[in-house]
Image (cartoon, rainbow over all chains, first blue to last red; front, top):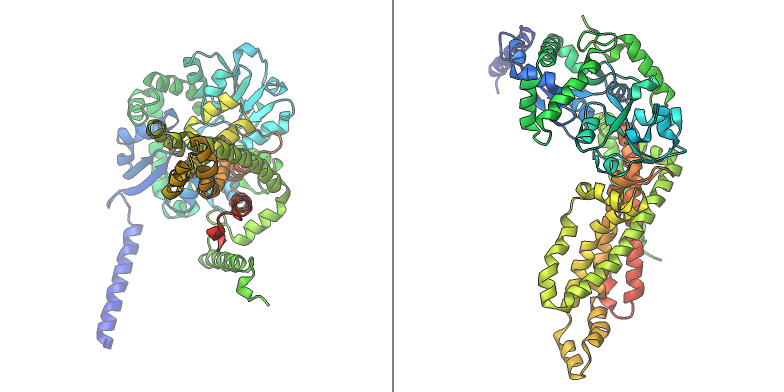
Length: 321
Length: 261
């Protein structure tokens, strides 16, 4: 190859690179929409209502975003998928984010759906238990081991007087055994148990003071740095989507029912009503908003449980504007 | 003096050092973070630090797996003998034996819990369901492939069918049965671990399945792999036990069986 053609190739390459850089810095609204996928951590259900509402009513399009919602299921490694770059965004709980950060993953929380943790312990009302602590005086408790919630309860109440066994997202053992208590999403299992003829009573985990944000949208810091503007537009679309869903959940519920036909429409409706106060919060908070104090409390609690080393959670979330 | 390569433990040790060394180097070179791929050295450290819990968990799972394998050996052999007894029985019931091989344990787990209760009963049942099929299939194959010349000999001697079964067909099927048992030994461990996911009792800390689940929830990939390593070691140990059984039982009859084991 002679010197001249070498120089021409070099020149072409410089032009290509500079045009690529120029495209990246341009306002994306002019070019192709920003493509992103969101890994949901469960099958479509009201916990994701605002996402489907935003998609179906064109709110993502309005913000010039092309968003794909990826349904999940049990055991889906949401955080690993985000960390390895296989998905752009995912949904998880605030405690999982702090634990992952402690293990070296630079994740940032963007939008917190549930202001209050919609998790609890469900028991049979016939037992006449008065408070959460009564659950630990006897019987059986079905719960996933290793979660922060498990550790909180173990530390607070002790598991010496009851039999603790796995929970596998199946209600049969609960329905079968009147002395069995189990973990639950306050928005899901109690509704299903009631429909199956049981009379469940629930005690929220947040009664213990452990109350991490959940239904949290999260991404890698790299994505946030590179696409700050697009992330801002995504959050705006989600706020609008959730506002629309809270006003009228029916259209999105119908979409989700088609994707998840095992959950019937009545359950969708009941669940979307039950979850509303957890989204609005006490006192009422703008949708999705997070504050540093809550993150600091959570961080301290996880340190106390021995799950993470002390660190400042300031950079763990994107403050609202 | 023995040549170096003849020392039993040396070849596996060399391959172990080579493979773990390669993994360690690749992870370091590619600069992969621990949450995506833990280094073998981190896994070794986790093994060391958590040795006590992991050994307890391995014992917990090992007992359940051995009980499951024992039940599989006993019931699998009896079922195979029943199936071998008449072609009609075989045609009627053998297809259903395949059920054991295909049933997704997770799907029937809640039923196992209700039938056997939480704890060892349901875990052993899961281990049995997963490990019984290779024993049925291999033993049956052995029972049906008796040398026809020998069968003729027994017939000439007017041996009863029971006599033929115990003196000829069952002894001839033992190597097949033991092959099935070796295949089943690893499956019994897997079955017990899956059983623990759904039915373990946490009172004494639980088994390997529970250890894996806790490590996953705590996002400790090093500890996950340490627990996986313990389950492999457990599988290997049970495999050796079965192979030992093989040697003891077959030494007299089937000399060619283990030239290379």
